[in-house]
Length: 227
Image (cartoon, rainbow, N blue to C red; front, side, top):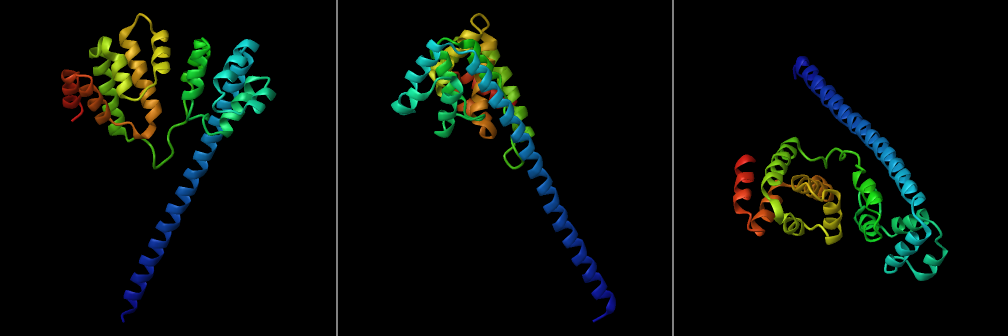
């Protein structure tokens, strides 16, 4: 075989190996970046829980413990004397972390600490890691859908929230945050829905929920705008 053919094959081999190694290095760097971002977010979330704990009165803590009776055993509850210990128990049981705040949000609302619930709701997890990030196209569609829905849904926003799977406690909390501004209420509703769905949020779900609420005209507008 011609020597030049061997040299050509060698060049191809080196190029392929270089590409393979580069991909692995890039993946490793992205993984390390994701770890750092997640670590910082975890630190911020723990600081937030510490802040919430420090603002709970003894009576409010007792009410939280009572409400957690189906999540934490009676003997363990008796040893809890501050919010952080309760939050640790909930974390150990897999019902509280930086991406799963719904239960604590509901608990804070039930003890009439909407101020603390708002702090918790305003916490933002880091952007999704590579491979799970919401694509820019879908993100843009959701922004358009949010604008259209906020301007058109009106007083049926609670029904839409139920169709999207938000709890009654969460709906009550949203209503309390924006008691007189209906459009902002709807925007907050959709914000909470997107937060709960993460990278799986899709415009199609909003359209289906709108149709289930007999909001067909709004669904048609969203559908037409997002094609």
